[in-house]
Structures are given as C-alpha cells and as structure tokens.
Length: 382
Ligand code: ATP
Image (cartoon, rainbow, N blue to C red; front, side, top):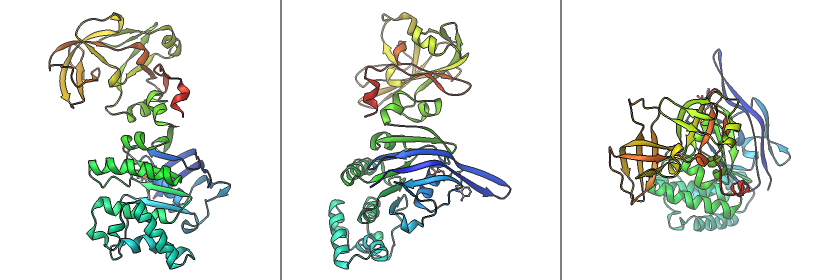
C-alpha cells in the first residue's frame, strides 16, 4: 500500500494548430487508503486527470508516483490500478461471473480455484451472489454497476479509479449506492480517486475533495473545510446546495455598500478586506435568518419580500428580494425550518449575521474572509 502523488501534472492536447491545456500543473498527494473525490464542472479536466493516473493518457509534464515508483512510463496493465467507469463497460456476451474473473485469468497466475473463490467472496460482499450466471443484459443498471465494482475489487489493486460510476442510476439507487460504496471503500481501505460533477457525492463520500476548474486545482481539503472555508468564489459557489448567496458591492470605509444596502463590517472583517475596493459578500442560505419582527442586530437586518417559497417538507427554500426595482443580482435564498410559515409576497425582516459572512475580492475571486466557526477549525480537518 502506498500514497499516490500527482506532482505538477499537466496535459496538453494538440488540436490542429491549437493547444488545449486540459490539466494545468496539478499537484496533490492522495494518502494510502484515502477516498479523494475530484469534482468540477464539465470540461474542467477531471477525466483526463483520472485517465493519466490509469495510464490511458500520456502525461505532457510532471510526474505521477505510487509510493516511490514513477508511473509515467508504466503500461496501464502493469500499474496495479483498477478503474470503474460510468458506462460499466461489461462484456455483454459474458456472464457476471466471467466478467468478474476474466481480468484475473488474463493478467495473473492465480489458479482457477483461487479465482473462483475470490469472485464468490466479492460477489457475496456486493450482494450479487444470485446474479453471477446472468449476462449484463439481464441485469438492472444498479446490478450491472455492482458487477463492474466487483470486477475492480477482485483484482485487489493498490488504487481504485472511478469515473462517475453512479451517474447512470436513478436518484434513489444513487443515494443507496453512495452509502454502500463509501462503506466498501472504508472496509477495503484502498486508495480511491473518484470523479464526479455532483457536489453531493463529493460532500457525502469523500475523505477529501479536490475542486477543479479550467484544468486547475482550486482547493483540496475535507468536505467541511471546503464548505466553511472556501478559498475562492468558485469553490464557494460550487460546494453547497442551494448555492451560497452572493451580493456584489464595494467596501466604503468599514462598510459594505450595494445599491440597496449598507452593511457595517466588524473590525475583524474590515481589517481583512481593507486593501480591496470591489468586494462580494457571500452568505449560506441556512445562515439567512427570517424574522417576523426586528431583532437586536438592526445594522444587519433588512426588510425584504419573500417572492417564492418552495416547501420541501423538512425545510422551506425562500427566495427573497430587496425592495425597489428588481435587478436580479441582489436576491437572496434562505432555508428555513419546514414548520415556519412564510407566505409568498410577504414582507419579512431578514437577518444576515455578520459572523456568518464570507468576503471575496471581486477582481481576483480570492476569499478575503471566511465565516467564523464555533468549532475549532482543526475539527474540520479530521
Ligand atoms: P466531463 O465532466 O464533461 O466528463 P471533464 O472534467 O472530465 O468533463 P475532460 O474530459 O478531462 O473534462 O476534458 C478536459 C478538457 O480537455 C476539455 O476541454 C476537453 O474538450 C479536452 N479534451 C479531452 N480529451 C481530449 C482529446 N482527446 N483531444 C482534445 N481535447 C480533449
């Protein structure tokens, strides 16, 4: 068992005269047994990164290492890495059993008895013992994905690579498989890199998340660290559903000013943002508090109108607008408890607690200040 290291890895595709930098100087160390989720929007370079680790794509620059071994020029089949794809990639004419055993028969010296034993054991772990004699066409999507995972597990590799393995499943099954896969990974304790564009998968499954955008790594850290201490606007917006609210404005003295509101900063925040002029204030929907009447923090309370209320049962998602002409840029989304009644077009007092805000530099997108946490910040990193 060993750490997997990406050291300044770059991939440039030649497209006629053009060069496409798909992965740009990515460095990350994935610890032995760690579950790292690589997340980002379509085209950000996730799959290319995974394919370079697998050896399916050459590396333009940089180094990929497993322990002390440099993998750059090692053939795919010699890398001790198993990959699971979105498409399952099962052989349609082979039974589930043969799909799982085929790779071992081809690439190892194991006896047929040992192979059969391993397939039986993994099939039982995956809950597919009854399905081993069926062909993929006779299996549901979820069952096919279990076979595909089983095929990767029987190989007992050093590293699992998974490229959106759950995205062909319906929402309920996806949620089930998410938990199952996470438990399985812990049980097997195999270093795993899992690619998805789904931030919920990233938040719920990973030990650490690596967020990519435009070929570049934006931030790597445990889910709660990225949620509470995003390093820039991109991560702040990408992680969390509904997304963080953003208000664009400028710093004037020690206040934040938009066309609609003036919002005084505490000394701590004012100090953190003193060099910036145009800034964006971010606040998570669950931190936007709706009140029936004014509270005890009037400087951070505003009259707003609830324009749309989406009851979700356990909570309501409330869309809020500042009074005046609608600009569409200063609206907020709040999450309130399910039992709290907010009517559409109702005027409410909205409290934006100062200790919960994030402030970003508009020009660079960099975070200048992150929300205060009651938790010891170290607790996020465990
Ligand atoms: P998705 O979530 O849509 O799969 P992704 O984050 O996995 O996206 P990649 O498939 O890694 O993104 O692609 C990254 C960039 O590299 C994209 O701009 C893509 O168009 C480009 N790219 C990928 N493969 C090739 C190729 N073989 N030739 C040229 N450009 C490529």
